[in-house]
Length: 304
Image 1 (tube, rainbow, N blue to C red):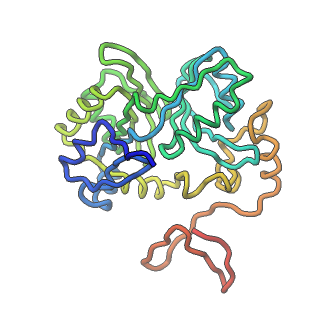
Image 2: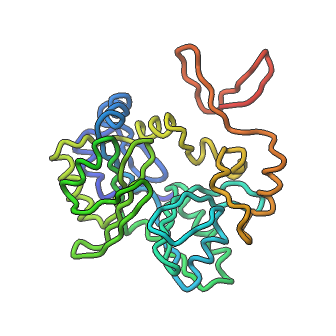
C-alpha cells in the first residue's frame, strides 16, 4: 500500500482544523464545521471545494478523438462543451464515469474518479494499440477548485474577466500563470464552476476566495448535495457489476455509434433489464445506509 497523498491545499485544510479522511488515496477534508451547515451554505449561497484528488488523463495524438469514441459510451463531439461518459467493460459493466473535455481532434481530457485513476489508465492502454494515441496521466500536475452555489458567478466575476456563460461550457487558456481550464459544471445540483490549474495559481485562488468570504466545504456535504440532486457516485450507485441501464444512465450510452467497448453487451442489457436504480422516500426520520435491504410485504425487493 502506498502512502496517502496530499493535495496542494492540504496545509490550508489543516490550518482550518478540517476533519481529514483518506478518500481515494488522498488526505481530504470531510468537513470544516458540520456537514449540515456546509450543505445549506452551498444551496443558499456559495462554497468552495478542493477536488484536486480527481484524476486527469489526456488522450493525445492523431487518433485521440477516434479512440475516445471507441473506449467511451457516449458520442464524443469536439465542441466547447464538456460531456458525461462511461468507461465500460466487455460485459457492459461500468469501469468508471467521467467528464470529457474535447479540446480538439487530437487532444481530449478525461476527468476521472480518484480511486479509479490507475485502473482507467491501464484499461485505456490495453485498447490503444490500433490507434495513434498516447495516454498521459497528468493527475499529479493539476489541481482543481470547485466553486458551487447560486452566488458562484457573482463571486468569480470579480476575479476573472471571462467565465463560461452556459452550463457545461468551458474555457481553456495559457498565459504566465500556466494552463487554466474553467468549466461551468459541478457535482452539487447548483450553478457552479470547476477550475483546473497548477499548484501556485490554485493556492492563490483559494486565498482570494477565502478573503472574499467564500466558505470552504468538505466532501461530506459534496456527497449529500450530489445525492440530493440525484447524481450517482462510483462505488455506490454504480460499479463493474452494474450496467448503465440498471444505473439509470442510459442517456450516457449511444447505441447508434459504429462501435465501442461493451456495445454488444449494452444492446442486450437494454433489452433484458432485470433491475434498476430508483429513488424512494423515508416516511419516518431514519437513515437508509449503504447495503440495507429493502422489503415490501415481507419480500426483499432491493437494497440501498
